[in-house]
Image 1 (cartoon, rainbow, N blue to C red):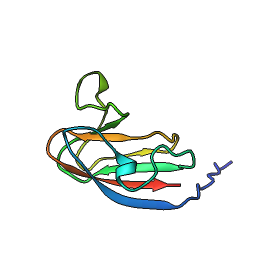
Image 2 (tube, rainbow, N blue to C red):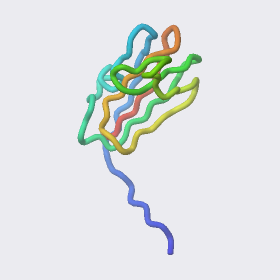
Image 3 (spheres, helix red, strand yellow):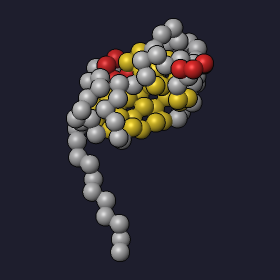
Image 4 (spheres, helix red, strand yellow):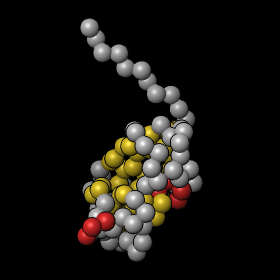
Length: 103
């Protein structure tokens, strides 16, 4: 028997966010999107720069106990299961992160 996959319907909104290295930025709010959102179906982040961006919670850091998920240059990450507020911080300089949120 073949697996049946039901597509998730929603409205995508896409934008770019400039992520610096001095303090974490709330990625979806900076993108003009909604922060933690119960109606979110998914959110995708793609690192458009040459420097690693670390994503995670409000205290995300580039090292130590709060070191976030490393989003290497050109890499992407998709969250299909939570309405979490995602923050990002660049390892150095400034990086553009492309954000697509589906609500």
